[in-house]
Length: 375
Image 1 (cartoon, rainbow, N blue to C red):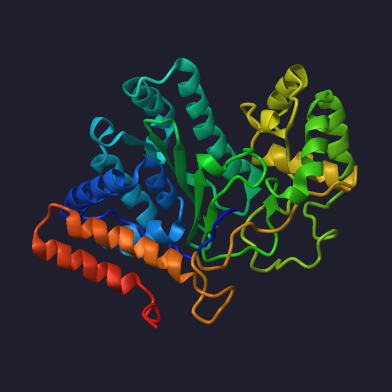
Image 2: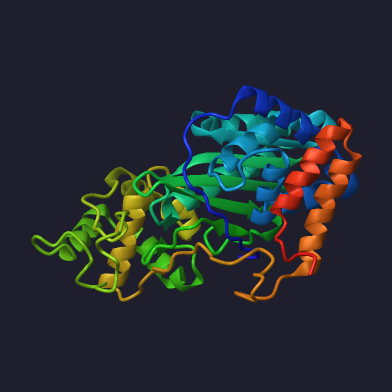
């Protein structure tokens, strides 16, 4: 990953009041217009992929900086504030059922931007695969409920999506940037942020999982009956969990089912895989019906029968996007921090809004800046 950040995302329920959202949309329109005009689409997309900057923008617009709602409310506000004809940028998808509209909205925006059918299909694929990866290839107990796909008129894109765990009331946010995605299933993220780190999590996008990816793909290309026999062979009588193989896990507090053998796999999807014969893990993951249980089952067969384990390291990072004030995990990158603050401050100053609103926005930005920043 290119960048990481620490952001606490406790689950907050309810809706943002309409009077606040209306003001946020107006302010967001002015600020984003200045940023896009001054720095261009690429820089704006890069900033959205920076969890620190994304959180700061939510703070500037007046929302609770530490809430999981920043993700859903801020992307919703930006979706309303950004106009494809005016800004050359659009946000597709959103929270809950709105996320399912992303493919249709990408097609509509692509037509406005004059994209070819092939380019539109590539964008739709990027949207679908980014969601599939974070919902299936990474299993830490945070199923997605929010997917926002940001696309520019030059075809570049970014993804901001979030998953939640209702058991421990926490959320996790995933940031993607097209310029940094070389492979959808090999460490494609710009950042994965949250305040909970699992002792054990299945991460099929880790470089350490490459051999497991290959074996999983090879297994899926076999006849489903053979896969069934292999699954049955690693499920001893009355043995439903992997505690036997992974005794170091925090069993009392573990809130996800990643350590448990799946009761069943999607045999229809595996039949499709057998008939399709995927060339690589990305093609396998892209098959409809290949979900978390099937991915986990194939990974466990790979580890326990063929000796090729996946990565069990949680990819979420506990580090500041710009370093920590005590030098942990590394010294503050003052230049990077100053640049982010300058971009937002300049945009606020140049925005066509009332002086009182400018002062309030700058005050909120100052509150977000660490107290040692001036030292």
